[in-house]
Picture 1 (cartoon, rainbow, N blue to C red):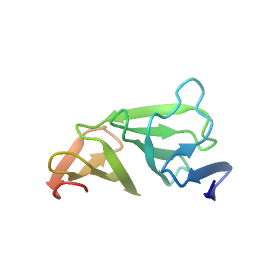
Picture 2: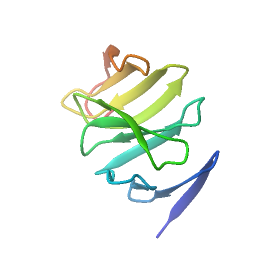
Picture 3: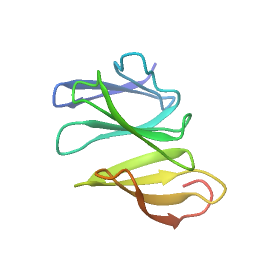
Picture 4: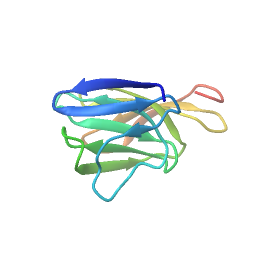
Length: 115
């Protein structure tokens, strides 16, 4: 299987060719993960298309710290400070600006189907 490995501080994330991500998450395995990034604290933020949410894990990837439900399945994520920019796939598709402090979507910009 074609894999790429990335080191994020002390966490090892294996990214598989089928867009699945695998790392330890005690009792809460991802359903259909699509992207993963780290924030300034070293936490792992993962978009999960299957359950329509963004999950935040501890830097070691073992503890789910919080989750942010999304209206449409998230497909990608970029973090800048306390904001997450999340692309979603749905009838129209959106770029959603998520506050990591409050968990609220601050803006939602239509991008067209298949964002």
